[in-house]
Length: 348
Image (tube, rainbow, N blue to C red; front, side, top):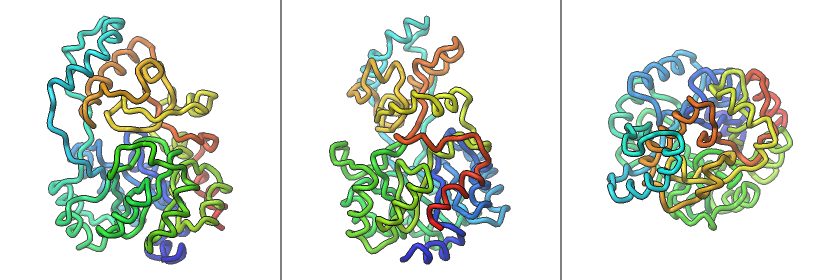
């Protein structure tokens, strides 16, 4: 499928996709991007059922193309021994803040795509669904495709791209190592197998017959142009939208993205238990950034989210994570439509 075919299939002016960014956006950003002629995305992993239905209703009522994004990880079995190791690693920080590490409440998890989620989706029939960590079970995928949804999923290696092609994806997002937020790997946890966008992209393009969407480190029209030259049928951009007027990014996060701090990002599992890229903070420097201590994804979130929230009440950002890709140079305070048009100039 050529890029023009991808545009026609999705009803877009440009094959430019806004990356779903849970916690940093809701439907307002997605609608602004879709309204400008690209594909906005609604991240769903953190949405409670009522909020999910409200957001989907807003997206569907717009009449614009949009993407609904889900994780499809297998929920872990809680492990008391592993959680004890995690809390022991964090205890000095809890003590420093005068907190009881054994009084951590349940934290925000990340819900995987499920039969219940598919039931809700079927009410609205979103035109595009994207997945992180592979694809949902065959029966769920068949349900999604039964209403004509176009299915995307992230691949971080060539074997993952081939797996997605074999198991029913309609297009592949080649997520390079530069990308902010959670890594989409699902066949191997070996981070040494991960590669940068412009090394991964041409290899995936050569290996599969599906359209390939480049993601990671692209923050300007020149980056879009380079991805197209390497065979991308489209481009997905996340970090450059984090300072958009419609984003929910906090003032502190916006300030970090527009400072020298954004030049130093790392892949860390300290926030949720699974590798994700963000700006270095104190706890990443002192414990990791990659550690054997955290509980399995997303169970590690509870203790870290509580520690972060309590520290922020004391005016401290030592434990606050600011997701960011390696290239935050495109971050600017502007309407998302303006950011979209500036990026799309690289496709035109």
